[in-house]
Length: 188
Picture 1 (cartoon, rainbow, N blue to C red):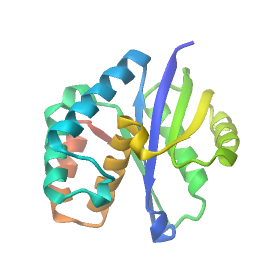
Picture 2: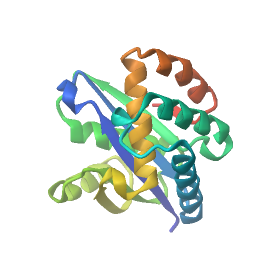
Picture 3: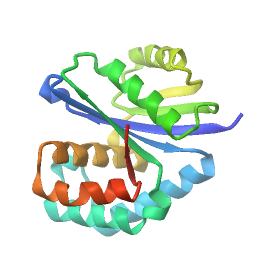
């Protein structure tokens, strides 16, 4: 059976549920995953992006976003984001976003391998079962740290960027509609 890979990060737990956004980078095959990882490593190297989005220098953020736009063809239809307002169940929101992202990408018939930033070992089974209840067949659900994978770092960057947009930061307003228009980011 074919596989779909999903790399997930979120932002907003510090707002106590007022605003919570989940970003999923969805890739349809192992080869596509490898190519996208290599592209992201190259973009990180060229733009000098080395840390989590919220800790990244403003000029580095701008270079990174410009690089994403320059590679719109390779990034198109891979990055999905869903926003939640006034929630208290972050795990359920994450499951909903992962499920919706995979379905929006039209890959729900494939086995999903899902990597979620910071997912603890004791919640892996709960998340896998919840995804199956939503019609997503999982081969593996695993927690990763940001520094472990370029696609998790991409999801972190987009989640952080979209949060900046929702918090009305000026630079984010300039880029958000361009990224959505180029289908680099798809809002769910």
